[in-house]
Image (cartoon, rainbow, N blue to C red):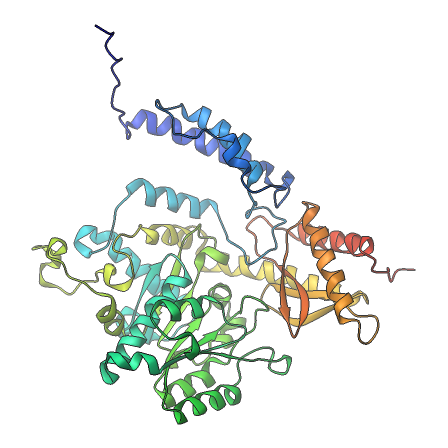
Length: 498
């Protein structure tokens, strides 16, 4: 007879002593990472498929100690990462992390509750209602978005989910009048600066692609959507028997940080019976500062508003606030009530919130804990100071770019985003200038000393400098400018210095 197979003991995955020791190992690893992150190239020089050559083809039969796993993270994973928390990361928009956000995430994942209905975790559900009301007040939204004002909010994973949910609510509200066949007549409107997620969301919910209107903007309006351009398109659609469904207004567009006139768009939306959604994913964080509050003027005319604390509000991924003025319209489109989710003790007869009916998925993490810890730890005053510090850095960068005759600021700075490029020296050399700016951006990013991204507006290739990293200080912004000047000279831009 062959020898017996060795006995394998089932793990005790939440043994308190092991939990403490292994968690400490992870925290020590992250401590070292954050101490060293500035020394890493912001974007790796990685080739597709590299990691697969370094890892086994199959999982281990027997587990490894945490220290061995962390060593593989250090050797194989970290070198292939783009370091979003580097103080020299100026690409896309910031994706903030913080000690408080990490602590909140640890509490959330450690408690590991699933608050899809109130009964599944009453305190988690109620904390979410509290923090979305807190955030509603902080960013200056009208009372109609508070639970006490007849509205309410929910924490999603991203703006993309918020957009799909509000599109579904608007669609079902319209189809209750038109009948299901009316979906072929529904039209969605956005500007050419709106996020692409609106087109994706419209496709997902069944809006014909030919019924999505992308309305041009121009420098004359600061690349904001104008009422005249919107109304001309809407009027033409109505004349052709189509039904205006949904309008996207943005506070802080992705490419340029442009701001749409919320009040004017709201008045148009009311006139045509459209759902108005205000996307403030990035710039919503700045609305906690009174000096930016005019950007949301007219929000009382909106049906929904969203912003992402995981971008510029020190809340680790993922966290998106969505507020709706009429929760019943949202939940009637998204709710389901299978018997296995009904609880005989659900709220003792009192009206409660079941967040499964405010989102696409059933299961959901305890995001409220994370945002609550951030708000408790830093407070409103601390967060305002944090936002203003980044805005001041961006103001300095914008002034410095304008002072160099080789460069131009393409659109006036909004919040903490600066868009710039090497300017044409002669009339008619647009293609050559675009080529030089592309080379400049490649050279900056290839240096590993900073990471920026680009945008194209009015057929111009422009470089985006998005200030907002949790570890970014003024010296990093100054160093980024010195790097830009250095690489501009390398790609052939003549210095203006004597």
